[in-house]
Image (cartoon, rainbow, N blue to C red; front, side):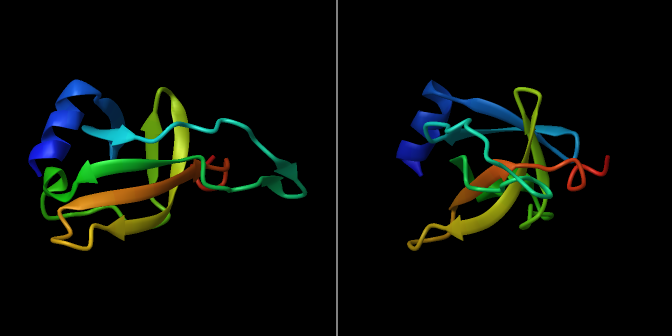
Length: 102
């Protein structure tokens, strides 16, 4: 927890979920896109690491949309740290127009 708190304070990235701002840390992004029939391929672009206690009682789930730097991203998978589950890793992919409700 101490290391994660320090990393977030030193290198924060802000994202929106349910129109509320949160902070975490992301891995190196891969902003390439692959177009296929039916839209953009939803491959993992990067991981977003957050402390689970920042969300309160309602937590994000797979399929939710985050907005970061005006880019819509879909939570493809959530992994919890094996020790205490306090750090979550969100596997993020570009969100299609359908996923964004457009």
